[in-house]
Amino acid sequence: QFCLELNVLVVALQQVCFPSGYACIAMVIQEEQVINCLVHGPPNLCPAIDYARHMLDGASGILNARSYFPNRAALMAASVATFPCICRRLYRIFSHAYFYHGDVFKAVEVD
Image 1: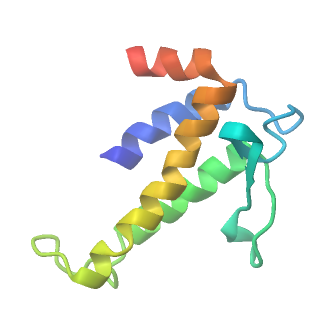
Image 2: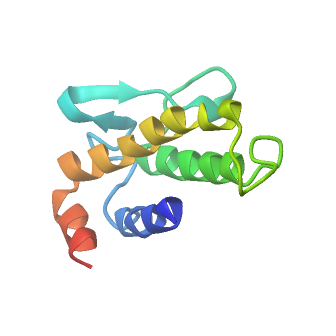
């Protein structure tokens, strides 16, 4: 459910988060911290909106993978260990949206 709702924010960001923008040429979060994207083989920079798409796709893939979550009724410890990493990466989308596209962030939160 969290990933589904985060998609609403990412869709809204597509209207304003362009790769040509200062903070959007890469995933920049609070205090000018630039985040590398892990999808590109060796970690590399990619535009913020692409980073958001990549992380949502990756999180959805992991959360729906039978190898990580073979049984939806009971979670294995190894599966639960993936949650902090997934949450940290997805939180960066919120951080970027809040600090660089605050009007869009607030509009989505109101809805």
